[in-house]
Image (cartoon, rainbow, N blue to C red; front, top):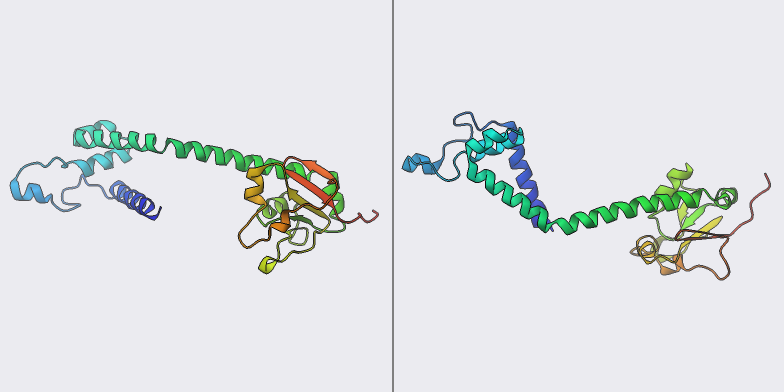
Length: 211
């Protein structure tokens, strides 16, 4: 993983340099060793100018600089898109999952039971992963929404409403588990939950105080 990232970073840095420092100026990147030794044009001559032209979207000038390099860039670009097509699909799927997660959390915190029980205790999740989104949507602080996972694999109190991830394997893997967290944090108690919405089951642990 590090090697492709390093190669990509080096390529981006090179293209950025060629965009900023114009190779059309004679000697701006030194002289071509092949040209200096033989007096002949090498197959890559004009390549730097071609890349500079492409970064400025001057396609006609790029072709006139070096048509071979332009064709090579196009072939490499198409090959990259073909090879990475599956990755783009996976990215699209992941973005949809993130959007669905946000919507599911919004539906959860909109439940009257959740907002009512916040009067007597926090909303709790198996791990920390859904805590920031829920805090943001409820405009709650660290005492209003937290995880049941304690330090060293211990369990914290369930709070006012304890939320468990059930019935959706992907949600359960992503949000019901975490390294160093006891699986017991996502083990629902016996009995029917007080609410069910999407992949969430909520258990009312305390009784709301009178208003």
